[in-house]
Image (cartoon, rainbow, N blue to C red; front, top):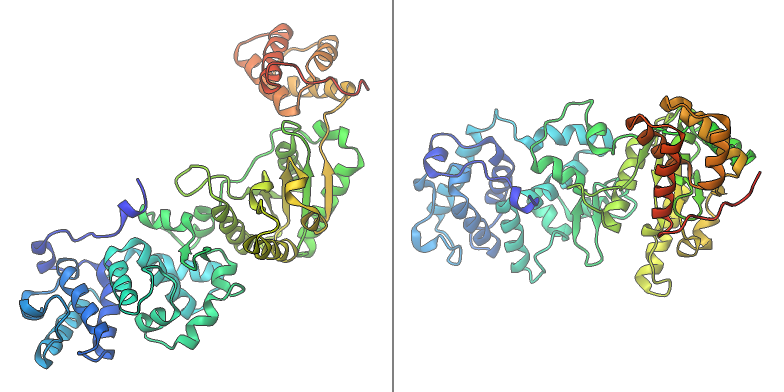
Length: 466
């Protein structure tokens, strides 16, 4: 189900609303009460307020007596003084009835403010942006006010933020700058059309009405940690590079060094992701993947991956035991190096590479897409190669032992020669052998089948023989 389909509207009937206004309506009531006290009743903005109040009467818990006369409920004709006053009193009474209640969003906002270090103004902006995305009455009010100004019906105007939050535009504008905390944290983003968007993962949690405690913000927003599946010895063919990488990550965490990026590159199937997980485990760190799925578990867009990266950096930047993994990083880099938008995007990405607080392990299949400018900003670059026969034989023996599969030394050497596959394939083949209660012949058949399928019907080249 989409986020649009989950937009909040708990009160669905007028009889329910007449007895008690839902506390979820309080954010909208706060906005309408403020506008009614601040607007001139003859202004066009006052007409938008009237249309919103009439359209959301049941949701707000407004009585019939609080509404203007029927011929003025469309907001086109200004209300009389008495009607305007009566509407204001009705809105205030409705808000008073829910003053002690807590809206679902109100449970999240203080915890988000604490976790991301945003102030009260930034928190209010975030709350309004979330309200626009999840509450159809707030959306309609905003779009109505935008239309009166001749704007597109998008969430992008600092003037309207100021109007609905009861503050000055000069206070709002700095909070929406690219380097300000709201956008630097990934909580808010601005797309190519200038529309403000909210972190999709956060919107999904709120739309599904997931409850949150002070200790759960990070665990709910971050991807589950990636566990190491292969031992450190599985990558001994990388030699000194692996040890240097471990020392770099360890030093970065201990010293909280900003802008630490390690690039692991090479053809698909060489074990780049597996090495990243083992590398983090080797230094006692937790590896958090970034942007692997969108808020619904599907493939994320480039903007969603970028927002996830910024959010993860913000939440984990001060943590001395966390490392980020950005797999298949080519997706993040614009494909058109000559377009103006692409140039701006590259500058932004380069700054992100240089200033990130948490170490990031990047993996890539194609260095040409990433480009030399980004590669120069990496602290260490490691090419992943297939291990030689001797290393593969040792790995076969070690993995077989850990999986409880009986494998003679001669069989391990034979498998290493005939199946020149990546460490992850070896692990999967041995797991399948264990489940099948098989032997060396079973492992050979399974590993050969996987390696052949990965190679498009042909076994990969055996590579070095030592």
